[in-house]
Image 1 (cartoon, rainbow, N blue to C red):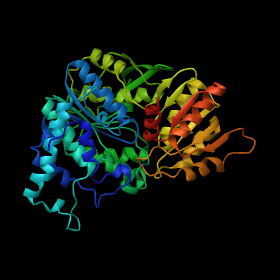
Image 2: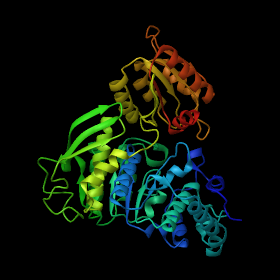
Image 3: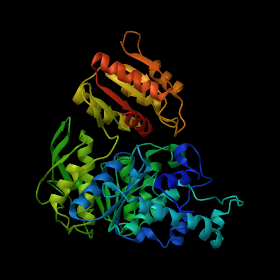
Length: 469
């Protein structure tokens, strides 16, 4: 039976082991994905690619690169996660969904691979009776689906964001023109390790032999890991702080404006020797570039700079005007997204301490303190650290369940926020486990007192708020 819609296809995919919903595969390994890709005729090779990993900002970087390539006239396939309102957000052509016929045809091929070609291949990797055998996972199949969609739709570039980590991530079957790694922080410690060095080591797994690495600003511990790995792989290292300079940053209600130029004293090029589009000693941006992006936040200027460096490195002929136009019209849900005015309602997927700090800085700069916070996070997040960061800046806080897709413990989160709340602080902290009811309570508090409302802690909570509207 053939798939009649992308919804049918997504329902079928959800039958497989899904880490995002709390299920854990027997093991994380890349050879399962390599086998699947080979059975599909290696669709990941259908077009040149850019591969993006990191802890924070990788979704924005992925979206900006895609938007600029589209403005240049490319037909780029874009793969990113998680989705907010529709699973098709993960698998797009440019800024739009693929045609339904493309999803369905790729889904039919995917199911044929799983049901027919895999059994015929007799691969022990997928023999569930073996200790280390396992059926394909949701993310492996979703990744392969993206490559099949891109090949079927005739995409001429691929912009691929990792799901988690990098070394063993299903997307790491690509051999990209350039690897991009955004800011690193402690995340997914159960799977990636409990130190910055270990997390960075997993992310560094996307660095390919002889291919440039575009690297965001990093702490010393992470930078050491990436520098060593780039040297091992003979990979030209293009380090953001040594390559470009950002100036004139202006954050406003409708976005962020800034100027991007070559760093005034660029070193003799740890990152440029031999890199495509980067002749030794030649700056990537000989002329300053004035840019605007429709997302408020100084950190978004750094994300945009990282995207621009990657574009100039992988596609040296791309015009500045395409970068400028693409960034200006770039859109991505749940990244400091404003859903309403009077009073303002902002949703943001921040779910780590570092991202909470960045989100709060932007919120305070635009709306001040004393607003309403709607917060919910998954059970594997650091609720205590985020509570310490967010609690002092809001007059009313509503704790809830961030939807039903991931395991969560709102009681534990509530106690994290309430434990440090001084009796004379004036902050009101309540818990409402029903997400819909909590949204209504937060909205009522915001409207009654004319206070800005920030909903954050999880992309899944952001999705619930977005869908509410």
